[in-house]
Image (spheres, rainbow, N blue to C red):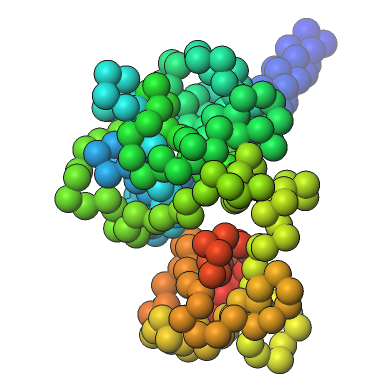
Length: 294
């Protein structure tokens, strides 16, 4: 009798332990899936080699990368050093990276062996020692195979595109991408600030002396950009203005304003976007804002 009771007790203990293991397994599986979801790339990068334009896509409601959120002008590989076509994934990230020619790339992101996204080359690991002539080549082939970007754009990929982000390099000379091909200013040889990238947000950057400032025209202090449903470009210019470095308000026609990010002006809602303004000197300023449509 005692043996039977002992046997029943053992079976209950085993069943209890199995139940605990099953629960722990389910919790562990859920945790792993949650971590995987957090680490999954949220962007896809399309590099139009022929047009020297990069377009970044975000996911739509179906999880497809169909929403263009950013566009960058770039320099792909020059003749004899063409950037390879194909589909790749980002892997290693470097704040500074020594290049094959002895120069340094800022905010470098590897996506195909020795091929990376990175800034305009620098002579040394010093943000004030840029090869300024190479900055003026943005928009045309110029590199040894990598995809060169303005410093702010290289940093955006470095900060926002997780390891494993898909990169597609393709050719389409006729269509740079759905957001078009941005332009950058040209730096003159006699410019005393020429060795700094104008887009670099480093506090030491002398370009900050002429960098404009974005401001909202309404009286609210919550820094929320409010636009009506179906807003036009005119509505955007009414809502966002630009001040020059001396604090004077720029007049209409003296600046440009562009919004980027995942938003829909024809769909009521709240969105997180980036607002970019470019003033008379061609120097850009960017600010993350909340957009309220409707």
